Image 1 (cartoon, rainbow, N blue to C red):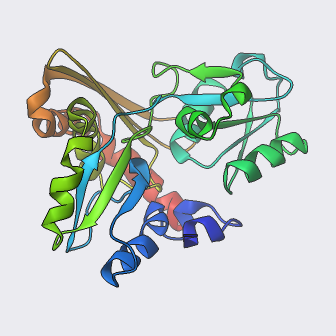
Image 2 (image 1 turned 30 degrees about the vertical axis):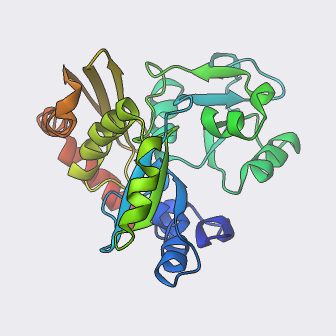
Image 3 (image 1 turned 90 degrees about the horizontal axis):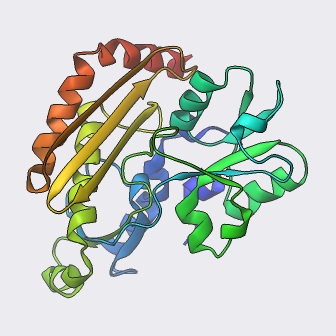
Length: 272
């Protein structure tokens, strides 16, 4: 199915209703009985599902990192002053602007083929994409460099797939339960808890990324203004089974760094 998120390509996603545009038509199809379930990129799924729907499983995460894609340059460090970088994400925009103020960041929309074609046509010196999408579509060779989380902290849920079902279909919940990957589910629950605490949407440059190792979780998060001039960062570690509590703890740590003031700037700019 093609959703409005796929169709509206001449405006930034944050200006036309946010990531939920990729999900709504699929939920309508399930409600009308035209589909039994929907598979989403989790970072496109709103923090609060509509009444009557549930996430039945979170699949094991692919590579969560951002990827640097360019035909002429090896990395962001190699781009010349004034080079144009394309991205659809305010999060990526803020992180790049904070570290590379000499670069020009321009919006980039469309499916993966469209984005790569715009790069190949010379509209951008480089573009930043999710590594998971390039790998899943068999295009890992287009990746010139990976942006490690220390350089570009991923979005909440990045690299994870989620299966959504109607709540009145308990048999689907039972059938799909074996596909749920516990460590991934715990990690993204913490990430999405942070995002939800700040009204998470694509209008907010917010990153949240958790890793789980032997039952222990480490969560990092960042909130920034779109131009990268103000950034709040925090991290926490704890028991992975307490993922929601860790997410709330991290959100409070960001709030203690005046994250609300940063978000107020974002909202003002989004309304302009």
